[in-house]
Length: 221
Image (tube, one colour):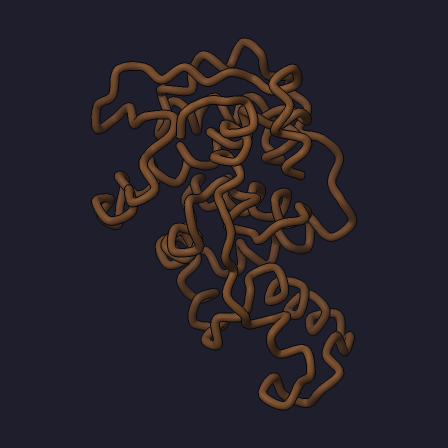
């Protein structure tokens, strides 16, 4: 929660190295997606966002992302060299799975685009961050929902097609998991006549959690 990451006594510090295309800043600007074409540049932006928030969390980077130290080391080597200073601080333990995490990872990987290790990392990260209390784009560390949708289009495009109504992603995941188990989650036969329509499809506004945490510590945006 925001209170967890806003306490400077509990948070890691992030030191940005000299910036280059292969070493993006620890806190890319809010409009960075506009200049990140689909491909490796987009991956660098997404992983910089994810690590930027995870490094501020009190529960630690490995536990907050559901990845082992070895997996994070390879992720950082490939896409986020500016976070290499975190590696000596990381335990190997990725934390204990919640009940639904394994099923959500499997669901995501059923819709992966190319069979890459990045998709395996992102499936684990999404499954862990979906447990958070905020919008998924916030709990992932992204600047806005556009960045979350860009991640899904690149690495899990069939999910975007399946979520054609643009349901909130957390609602969508758990509806899909329940349907897989033959459970009826919704009260209405279709979304258009449901009393809870706005809860599932309304705008996901808000501020990025990493910005709120830095503001709470009196740091610049």
